Image (cartoon, rainbow, N blue to C red; front, side, top):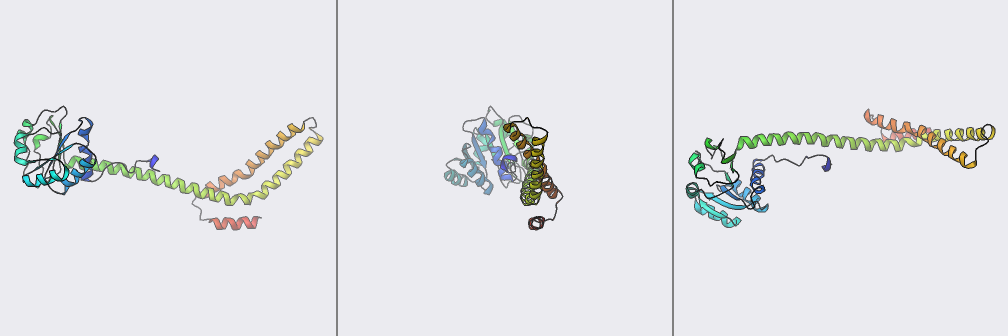
Length: 269
């Protein structure tokens, strides 16, 4: 089933969506520098993701330098105080900020001080209210990814998952129907077996009579070929209704149980 749908694809949590965005600079830079601003659970979760997937070098930024140092030691990264980071604007490829600040901590002046990069700096804002000011919305030096953007992406992924779930349900339904159709066919075949045997007896008798009285010029090899052809035709005509009936019963959602079919078979025999 996995080969026929993409049910497992597409992140739906804020952390996993942000992690997907953090992976983007890795495609254009050999070892990007990723700044994580804040020291909460989200920062730690994303630090693990960056480290586990070898996405780049980590720079921990926090108002309290000691907390940044602690995280840097834990994840083998570097640390800076938030005030120093804002003033010096060390070269970075991505900034993810998730602080509890009540006002934006990155403004237009910060953008002006950003080091020029070959690609816009990825700025991921997971704070409420925002850590990045409105100056980041349309500036070509940065690419802002905020919570509304991630939420819309999440909704798109959820819609895709519903589509894939529907596909998966259809695949399961078809497999179940095929299973029951096959079981019914196996149970129904014996019911038609006597009819097949009688048809074969009649066909052979008719052929023997034909070869003896009307078509006497055929060789034994040619007669055998005719016997094989007629046997095949009789078998198809005798057992084809079994397949059709089995499929029809499943299609109609028949309540006829396999055990009941076996009882019918016993009565027929």
